[in-house]
Amino acid sequence: MVKRNIIFSCLGIILLLMGSCQKPEEGKSPKTGNSANDQSSGQEYGKGKPKAVSSSRKGPPKKIKKTNVRVSSVGTEALKIESTFVGYLLPNERVRMTSEMEGVIEAVDFEEADEVKKGQKLINISTKELTLRVKIAEANLKLAQTNLSRDEKLSQRKLIPQSKLDQTRTQADRSLLDRDLALINLRKSVINSPLKGTVKIRHVKVGEFVRKGDPLVEILDLDKVLVQVNIPEQDIMKISEGETVGVELYALSDQQYRGKVQTIGLEADSRNRTFPIEIVVDNPKRELRPGMLARVTFTKQISDEQVVVPRHSILERDAGRVVFLVEQDKAVKQSIVTGQSMQDRVQVLEGLKPGDRLVVEGHSKLTDGETVSIVK
Image (tube, rainbow, N blue to C red):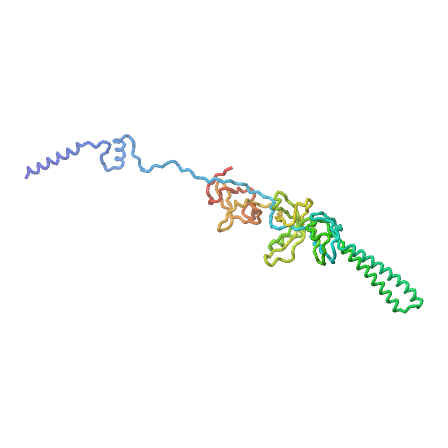
């Protein structure tokens, strides 16, 4: 029993000596249970470099992406508000002459498109016959006046009754009226131009028989033309007589004319609720012809200096209209209140002031506070 215990003790000593004689593996430090010793051992038995504490490595800082925009400095200007309507041209005056009597056309002293003066003779209708009738009436009047003079002397001497004198006086009065009526018919037979203008249509020829009411000639005054335009009821109160307007023609797009409001309709058309107005335009060269289409522009100028911005710089949002400004390379969203507008220019009543740097390009997808780069 004692021998067995001695043997076991010898074996334990041998095993202990063998464990203490083993060398540590290359690159590894023996476990000591102390963290500080572990770190120093790693530095001593390693490749001479301490192990990194963190497994993740930080790269270079990321560049911030900037949106390119164009800006414009907000300024002030006099705002012109323009309203354009489409109308058509009419002659300044139009006269359609018809016959006041029956007769034969004896003479026509004009052709179509001729320029005629006021009072110029144009047509004779049975003038020769009516001239003879005037002479007959004048002869009858002369005889009646002679008879009246004789009977008045006889009546003073009581040689004829008063009834005879009355009959003679009545006959003289009728003869005078017949003469006057013949003169009126004679004047009707000679057709004179009532105005200075241009002959548009000649309806008769020499030798034709016309009746009362038959058309003879149509004359237009083209020294001036009228532009007739229908104005909606919401705009009619802004227009006044004598107001100067701009007129352009579709046929003469390179020419611009000035006109004045001559008449304003008093009653609206029940079909479209518009009021007719007429604008007179000088036409010395006869370039403007009735029937042409015209654009009429009414201009209302606001003389005060107003903040005006391009229409495309304004964005529509659920909360209202906004623009973007640039402050310290940052986009700043700004709500605005707009007023009048003219084509691509809009008046800003609230929200902007002169000198603000307004984004005019590249703003459609901007967000408030976004970093921007200004492109010149």
